[in-house]
Length: 267
Image (cartoon, rainbow, N blue to C red; front, side):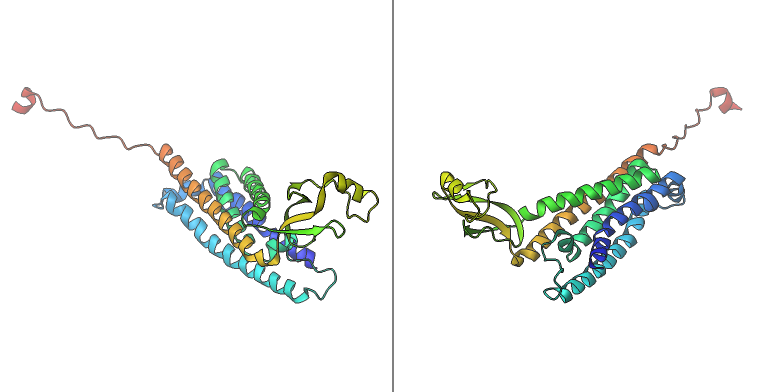
């Protein structure tokens, strides 16, 4: 049950992106409903602002509430159930924090931009969904590097400290240099002690984020995702203004009546 609910929470941003691209903007552009609204006195900018304002508030509040409920459920079974996930488990890490809310807002902006770019329902759905997937992968890769790590060195006979979010690991030499780990294991494994002696290794090192880094990691990644969401939103408005400006035809300038001739004036 925990696995199903966790993936349901972290899957919300992708559903938002698909819905925004297909139904919110793409279908409106494809069917001509948006153009009809623009001819009734509603400017394209106000139309897009109205399209995004209410969904953005609903997505932020709704996703935030689900994340909070998930965090409460995870906290209740922590250290009480043998199969409970650790705080640094990737799905749990995102389902428990504001990164999922920020990604959902970025997905909304990505879907809207895709709808304006492709102006068709299905391509906009695929494009918005695909960009949100790329953004999620990029956030996972960037998160460990957004905050300074902690380095812990252990003896060759004990192995690594397996906790937290790992950034780097390997062997420490007698001169303090960090080198790659050949993957032999602790010294009690046959042949490992001799291998480490040839490498002049004295211990294992591991750069990682302990649990005390939970909120710094969450907040820095959230800020990055919100910045991307803001950039996508600005791009969508700029694209809409540019596309509507090029499609508008200027009204013809009235031609002044020619001056009457001398004969006409006499009559």
